Length: 152
Image (cartoon, rainbow, N blue to C red; front, side, top):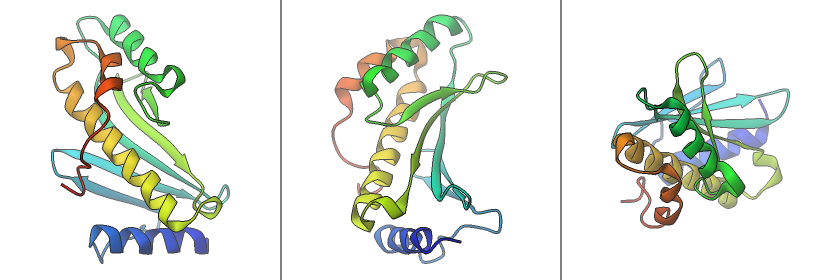
């Protein structure tokens, strides 16, 4: 495993005060965030990249086309995602926020900040999609400021 991912995981352990945080033998780690969000980290040895993935909700079953269109609008120029991507698993309709990080390309502090921003964005989409029938998802772009769910 790359030294950069080992240093990144060590930095996360310190910032999150989770000394047991580690990738397993498949190079995967799951974090459970207060509020019901699960963030999965997957390290790709061949590409030296870390995939950050969070299941944030389901497509609206009453009007999946319109809901998917609103999610795409939020992806446009990253207006509602702050650099992350919203994705829909075609067979299940599950909605994910995902991002990719190359820890060796940035400082450790910056990598941890990217992770923190990812968790914040995913948490806000998770919370927002719990009430999916109540409004347009693209409007979330205007509310992506505030406290971080890991820092209170």
